[in-house]
Amino acid sequence: MAGLGWGHWDGMSVDRQKRRLALTALMMSALALSGCSSSIADLPLVGTPSDAPERPKEQGAYLPVNDLPPNRDEQVLDPKERAKIQADLIAARDRQAIATPPQNGKASPTQGQGQGTK
Image (cartoon, rainbow, N blue to C red; front, side, top):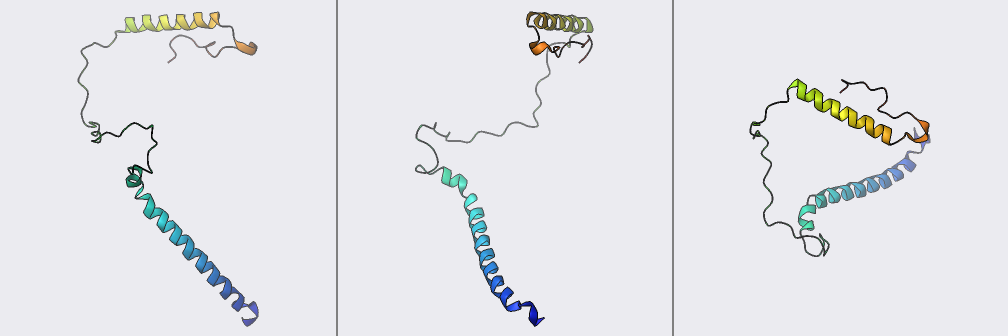
């Protein structure tokens, strides 16, 4: 195996090790500094522009995830009211389609949709 030039590869191995060590040190310092980014942002000279609004003294509270909203006092629409509102909306859509002609001679996307589609 002496003919393979292991001496040459040993020299490159040292260069690669140095390069790998430098890259590792760079990555570790970047990770260490990224943990300080929130405290660096609070510094008056570095973090915020001069025209930025002032930060609140206290951080906002967490949203109440487990609290449910109160029950509604209103009743659900009965099917007749729902059908009437749906018909009104369809009629308004059709009037709008007639008022604005399709561009480039293409059919409007609402054509071919019948009532009852959701």
